Image 1 (cartoon, rainbow, N blue to C red):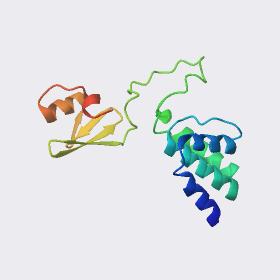
Image 2 (image 1 turned 30 degrees about the horizontal axis):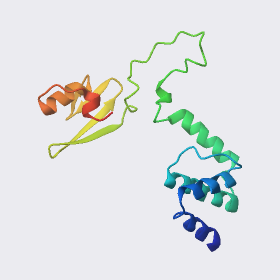
Image 3 (image 1 turned 45 degrees about the vertical axis):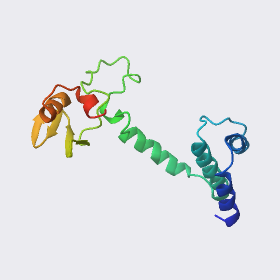
Length: 156
């Protein structure tokens, strides 16, 4: 990327929100920004300037990204849930996993009273200190000695 584009991007960083919104609309064919966060808009503008200068993601790369999202979506746990909307005629066994839980194998860490807690998410249950627990609440009670909602205690 040439020096003028980089300096143009850096100059935009200190502009007021209204100017950034106007520049956004100019670069994105009249679309208004979806956020009023100045840093977010500046980053979108910077990416768009570079995209116009160098070129965007190839179709092959975008297709591969979409495939990986469909297969390994960690936010929505799509890989663990049946596609009930696409197959309404089939009766599928409902997943018993709580949607707030990360995928199995994830390790949740929490600092509690100068102690670092590490809980591994299992397919059915949780592992803490080489012992398997049925619920996060049971682990929270083991650690604190008081009853806690496990999701609140581990900030899930």
